[in-house]
Image 1 (cartoon, rainbow, N blue to C red):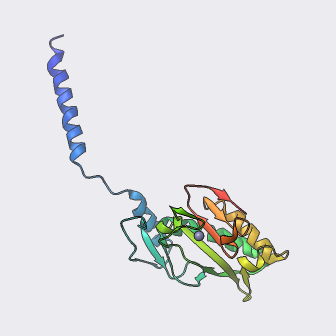
Image 2: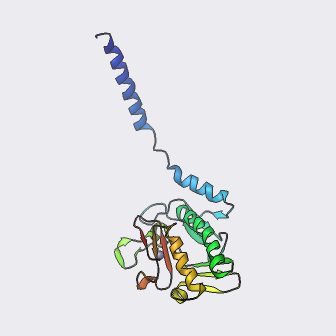
Image 3: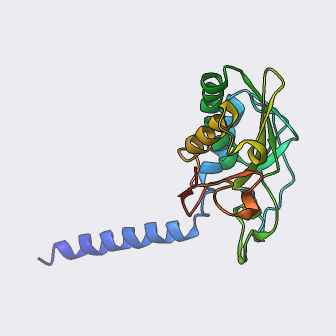
Amino acid sequence: MAGFRPLGRALIAAMLASLAACARAPHPAPPRAESCLAALRAAGLGVEPWDAPTAGACRVEAPVRLARTRLALSRPLETSCALASAWLRYEEELGRLARRVTGRELVAIEHAGSHACRPMTGNAGRASLHARALALDVVAFRLSDGSRIAVEEHWRDRGPAGRFLRAAAELACRHFAMVLTPDSDRWHRDHFHFDLGPFSRCDA
Ligand SMILES: [Zn+2]
């Protein structure tokens, strides 16, 4: 038995050495942000940097600025890479949905911004997902024939505009954790709110 003792001590010493090495090694940056940015650039979108806060309650992880997506945007979208990626996946299906329901191409999105350093609407005690650019407010959609489908005007419309909006909200529930609509509360009577959680809710 005595013969095993030096081996035991050597093993313990090796383990301690490797633990010490672990403790000294700097924590590697999470690969998520970098791979998200790489995927956006690979999609051929004009991704520009954006001078977002990097610390505090309104910090944005992997901030990106898109002058347009595959669609025209009413104004550049300054958001997080995570939100932009979810939006792009959604947008692709949304184009097909618009074609099917309205017979027109979806060409532009009117949005009311992603990043806003403020508390949650209707709940001042909690930070909004907009504070971290993990949310997006969408006001209206424009089609190839020049028509405009607006959440405020058409949510309860019985024609194709209303059908498109309700189906667009339903589709959004597959891409975002939370989807708020005019059915949610009075703060959302004129726009859709999409966010990436942690809470989930689908008011389609
Ligand atoms: Zn919102």
